Image (tube, rainbow, N blue to C red):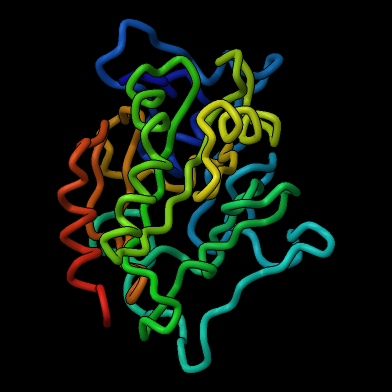
Length: 252
């Protein structure tokens, strides 16, 4: 894993997020403050607020790319109530979206979190995994290199697991991510059955991270409730918690 430190980011960002990101366990570290030409990535917004700077955002449908389809919940699926946020036990805000490529897409588009909401199982989604990743992180590479085969293996078991990978920086590791970062990652690891996007707003980083997070950072979401059920720095090659959730939801 690799640390990405946010300690030098503007105070406004740290006040909003209460956290700095990092890549754990690697020999390298990088300040995201140095990734831009004299400026830091845009502050992460409060749930429901707009984010500037592109990539991961908390924006509404107005930010969708022209002509990009926005999946909507099935009839009768009102967005779950309860505390909204990015901590375990909280519901991901309905406004969360990213710019990138959906599974199998060749054209970039807005990927809305609502695409993965399956309150009654009508869409057949059993689990949603959001992976916050970055270049220059050996563990991120390891996970990504086996991800397509994992998703296919789960499908062969009858489990539909939706995966979104979010990139925090460009391939050089020194600049904020762009759509090129997402496309390069997708092509490098042949991610044909999962979504890849960029996230300069650090939208899935919890406030309780304690000052830093390690990448790859896993956020496991129940598509029936959109509740975050597990978070983990690094990754479990067996995906124990993911499979527990998926098997519990299978056929529901």
